[in-house]
Amino acid sequence: MRNNITRRKFVALASSSVAIAATPSWALTQDEARNLIDSLVAKINSVIGSGKPEATMIKELQGIFRRYADVQIMAQYALGVDGRRASASQKRAFGKAFEIYIARKYGKRFREFVGGKIEVKSSRKTKVGYEVKTTASLRGSAPFEVTFLVSSKSGKDLFFNMFIEGVNLLLTERTEIGALLDRNGGKIDKMIADLKKDG
Amino acid sequence: MSLSSPVRLFTKNVVLLFCTVIVTGCATNSGGSSDVIYDPNEDRNRKVHAFNVSLDKKIVRPVATKYSSALPDVIEDSIGNFASNLGQPSIMVNSVLQGDLQGVSLSATRFLTNSILGVGGLFNTAEKLGLKEHDTDFGETLYKWGAEEGKYVELPLLGPATVRSTTGIIVDLFTNPLSYAMSSPETYYGTLASTSAGLSARGRYASTIDSILYESADSYAQARLIYLQNRRFSLGDEGSFLSADDPYSDPYEDPYAQ
Image 1 (cartoon, helix red, strand yellow):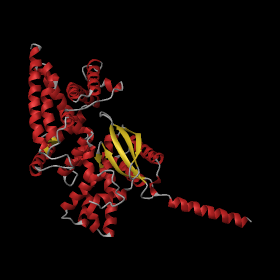
Image 2: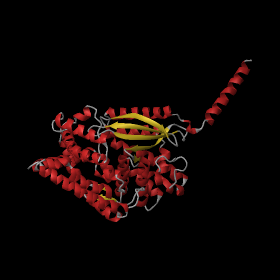
Image 3: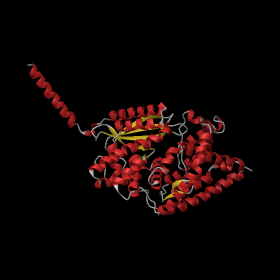
Image 4: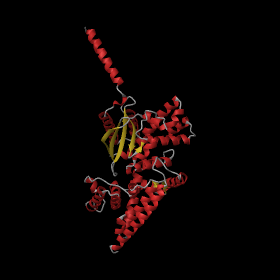
């Protein structure tokens, strides 16, 4: 009898987990997308407000990126069409270098945000997930718009692109990586080495 | 100076301006659509860019960094407020030309509030009162009138622009009503204030500008891309980047796609 119940429970549990696994990846809800960015923004605000030295801020930002952003898809997009001729190990090495590069690049600019604040304003559905608009108010400048694109296609709710006053992060980084490749005669390994010392 | 003379001068320049617009209208129409990036004079632009970067490295950046760190933030903010307040009448004129009544009233209210309550524009009282800021220029007026964006250009000193926005800059120089209402020493205050405000911005956003000019692999391409995206965003012309590089396209489908 007990066994039976357990078995029934097991079956119910198993089928429900199948149901979860079968839930399409785009099933991220608007609230979930908004919550993700709310919590991201709270983290960023606390780093900005902490007054910690720059190196610490960059470290913390790297952690934030790892938790909230799909850095791997960002890296792949930044590599663009050149990614097709990259080997698996080159892709891995590039992904790693890109993660550090992006945290350093944006972390260095955190200084301008000190004393500022970011607020979530609105959200709406897009093809891939949700778009969450936020407003950043910094000292001595008019508030500006920072938009995050969120998706759960990676298996987790993560943001994969960001626009600052219309400037698309993915496009900017694709241009940067493309220029780095040009500078290195199109050689992927040399570009990765350059990216490591450059960021 | 009698009152009629600045008014006459203003009218004369407005007439002149319409001639310019007609000419640029034709010139920019041949300049292709605002699809992604149209930069047929890239070689020449790159030379100007190299000049701008070396000027920034040798003069603008060192002066701006010193200037921004030497002045207390309060004073820097006041100079910035003063310069931006002097720009309001020009914003008002452009709002009129765009038929944007809300813009007219926002810029007029802002100008009056900050000039009177904000002690001649030194304080941004309007913002403290929660008044929305409206910003526009003649380049935007041209956009609203249907002029094409035209070629991308990098201007000496001023940096990234398009043919349309350059026309706007030139026209705005002549149509700020304030420069006609004031006698000569006061008009320089405005120029001085905007130069100082520019230096402040260069100093304050040093790391952002540095990251574009000195830390990117191709600062020309990066400045061009950032300028065009941001300019189109502020004009509400966001469709232009969609055709080739749809920012909402799904990178998960094929991140390595062209």
